[in-house]
Length: 171
Image 1: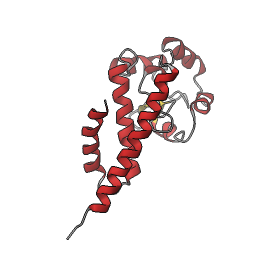
Image 2: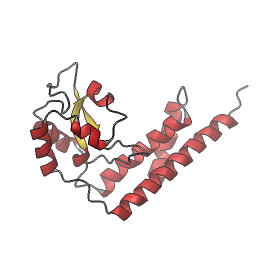
Image 3: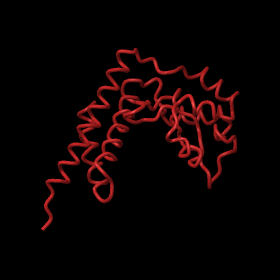
Image 4: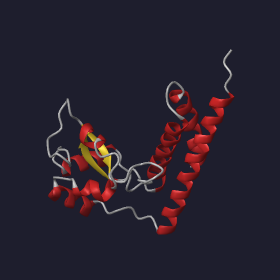
């Protein structure tokens, strides 16, 4: 899976070269890695379009946080209870995703899973969601391995981008 990520990293470097830092590229690479792990290894739990529609239906096409319906101005986005980043190692799986308006999602970026769950207004729907989609079935050992791999990937990409920036000479 890391080999797949290196191809993604090259694309990330091209896109991010204009104004982002090496840490932004590293975060994007980790997110791509976690999405790929979710899709390829945890296939039965992956949030494909059909599962995403089922999740939205459980919440009656409403934001899990504010309880207001989706609209053209406020569409529903996939909110990860455990963020897909190096710190939280959240996976893109059904039990980790609830529908949220972009503004509701972004206002909770710095929160942990438990704090996000406490802020969910649609409690009944959330209980149905959790009953249907059990938390990921990774063993503690596999979770530790995933944490280590994301940490290593983050460090390698950050260093790769930093070195690329420092070695670039424009005449």
